Amino acid sequence: MFETGKEREKEFEITFIRKADIDPLVTKRNLGYGINGKFENIKITSDLSGGGLPDDVREALKGAVIETWFTQEELIEICGEKLATLIPLKTRLAFISAVEMSLKNIGKIKEAEALRGMFSNSSDLVAFPEGSFEIV
Image (tube, rainbow, N blue to C red; front, top):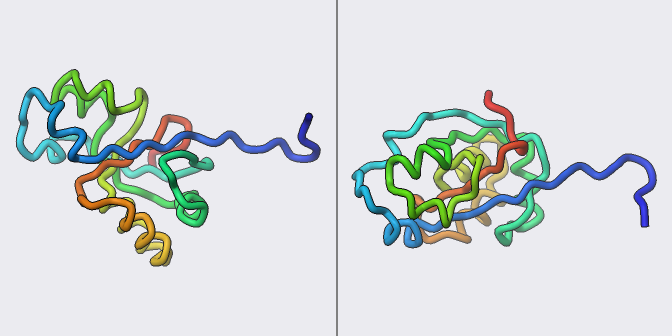
């Protein structure tokens, strides 16, 4: 079967990483690891899928500017090699609280609350894959 009209835009797989899953794998134990990363604002430019993300939240994220704290490589350097099993390659990571705040800042309150309701810790992470965003 083929699509007619405009070709469907590629979707990128978003990954959620719970702090509770990270802590047992941390071998370097740098306290306050988030402050050691390189802050970069990203703008979501493509459709995201995965992670059980509700459709309304997924749609609200497209076009949002989100403060990320580090890349997958930076977090592994800070916390240890075992994190490579959890965090996808070529991703930028943001705390769930930063993603929530970004949605609220653009008036997507309901979507921000839905996203926050999926997580118990504001230090849980969202990994945005390369190709789904641009640095702004």
